[in-house]
Length: 76
Image (cartoon, rainbow, N blue to C red; front, side):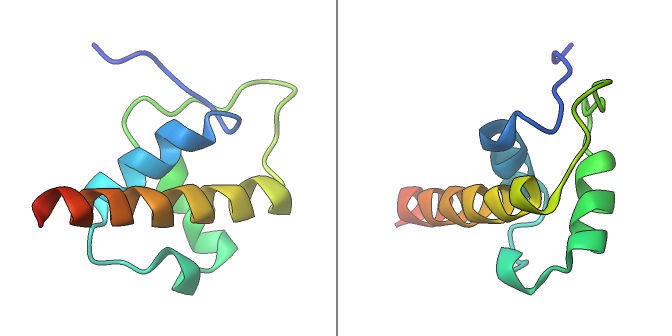
């Protein structure tokens, strides 16, 4: 069983989003939708005292984008 992770685990979130939504452009996803997508990932658990904010969501978008690029490079 996978361990749980929260909002501060932006690298893991980015990787999971890239795997779950390979055809989505992270920079076209609104923050409200992004939050819902992250909350729906297997193993995600919001940690008390670590709520999400705009800076975290922006960082997740960047990590998701980077993970998509890494996956595309591996396929080449």
